[in-house]
Image (tube, rainbow, N blue to C red; front, side, top):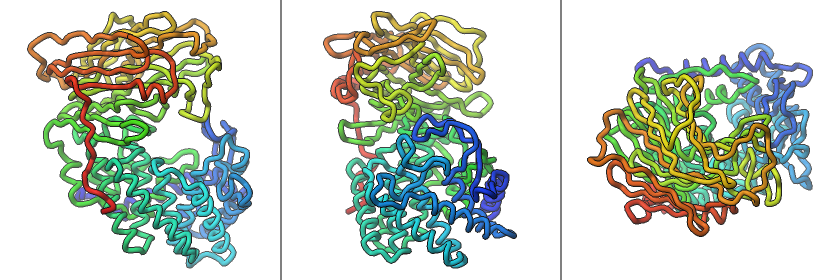
Length: 603
């Protein structure tokens, strides 16, 4: 524990900051918060303008009850009743039991609806009842329980696949706690059985399908903590304790104490800089600092953290504070439809992680790392695939990135899949025969925090960037796109440097059809090493790329003499075909794919 840490003071600060934003956004006529809706390309048709968010408003009601000032309870009760009225309570509807993101857009009008709202709002309702249920007027208490009943029924009906880790855990808590609250033995039995099935699913690999995802790691940590606090069942709590320990073990496997960052790879990520979110600040008792976020757009979630009693296992602290020597960590995440394995290198200055095969959706971090900058802050290395459609430059979800890693050295192969998503990995599909607009398609390496470069320049095959404390070496071994050879360039960024592999570029947007392009791949290598790191006795050989039959391949020998090979599809094929074509070797054999733990959560 940090000597100046006070959980109570931090909770009060979180509550004050969130309520200041909530009070600012209060709309007394609607009995909800009103915000300027942020742009969201999926689920909602509301892309901007004033709107009344359901989840944030319910969180605000909880926090009003926590504050307990004059008029707070009455305002909170009005929100709870309004939220109850916005729920779809018709069992015959597909959207039964859930809410829209906004009061202005019922769930049935969304594209598509977000069934996770049953889980998110269900948790908020349970917290209101657990902490303030005895003070609720009869009508408010009744409507709260009815909202919970319908939300839990939606969760049971959906029966989400247990590989959807954060939602699977949230729904387990909601059905367990709601089952007890509503005296619904069948619902509680469902939740208890789901807890067993969830832990057995994790036992299949020892790890998490939704692996190393900072925000959702926090969601799972919060939910497991709430199970500990609010579910009174010995068998459930025993499983919960084991799962809680496994979650921390998973976090620490890629935790890099020198930068205070999580390294790659990541299944889902919203920010390259982890920072110190409230759930982490509270869980580690101020060890990493305790900044208080300033919520915007009516965001109340950080205030909700004041209602959660996080507790870190004692064995976590030494590993959180110090890296016990340089190391390479490998971990099996999933086995089906094919093994998905991560590799992460960690030393005193740098950390670099990769996953063997992944799509390029915005939230993915298939090749990602950090380094300690000369001033002690952290720099971030982010590899992603971008598409400029003439109106906007965005992460293109139709890509495929395959890697093999040894230490801080990675060989990579990038390609494209169809059918596959445009901005989202499955909600806005580009189907075979579809034409789509693009002004450019580029594999991008963002070195955020790197020393600036004066102006854009074309590169011949590769570049080595001096990061002061570290070196970034990037090489393009070869590739093709519609008969063109990819090119390499260096581009200034306001916050660092960008390396771009340009697969396609046009002065005006072009209509592309995957079927007309033939070979569509690029291949190369990337290394992130500490300055002065030992090199091999011989000069580093250049990587080699080739295409043969259905495959493209890149081969490379690292400075330490390890032979890396990664193979994959050379043209646009389905994701399933890309998976079948993918293979990799390390020194002539399949890379290791060990479990995070051989211990079973369910003996």
